[in-house]
Image (cartoon, rainbow, N blue to C red; front, side):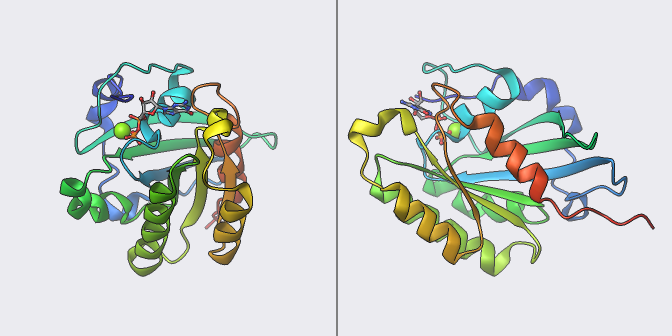
Length: 200
Ligand SMILES: Nc1nc2c(ncn2[C@@H]2O[C@H](COP(=O)(O)OP(=O)(O)O)[C@@H](O)[C@H]2O)c(=O)[nH]1
Ligand SMILES: [Mg+2]
């Protein structure tokens, strides 16, 4: 069970993000960035995207197969717009070999774990290492502890998340796709951290 994005079909015709050169655009006021979500199956990657793009939470929708593509534009206070081209990957092992196709050339990687699952936190650290080895050198990385609404079942402390993020130069936030807590903040903070292209 999970949040498959049926809206993916609507946007799939514009799925040019597989081009490694497509991680960023040149207009400094209208940024276009390729963002990839990585993390164990079931941590809520698809739900985070759906919450951000459509403002919805659907606990009954389907597991992501391979990867799906959605886009969303946000406006920052300095009137910059940032268009996120979001690649939501499937966490299952059988798709792991495909992951480099999605994170190669990505300007942003969002590594997600579930605060109730130490296994998913270990997997997140695996992805961080993978990105450090094979991702773009200037990639913006965020570490996200999702399902913060399940605090009574928490098994990964906030401090563990903070420490891991600090060690790896990442931005850290705890979110809930279910309650929408910190979902917009996640993307706004990423947008603020993007390297701004200087006018040619
Ligand atoms: N309580 C709670 N459940 C969530 C949250 N985000 C996702 N889920 C549930 O976790 C399951 C997996 O979500 P999904 O987005 O498919 O995970 P993915 O495999 O990482 O894409 C689904 O049953 C969701 O309803 C959240 O923030 N809180
Ligand atoms: Mg999914």
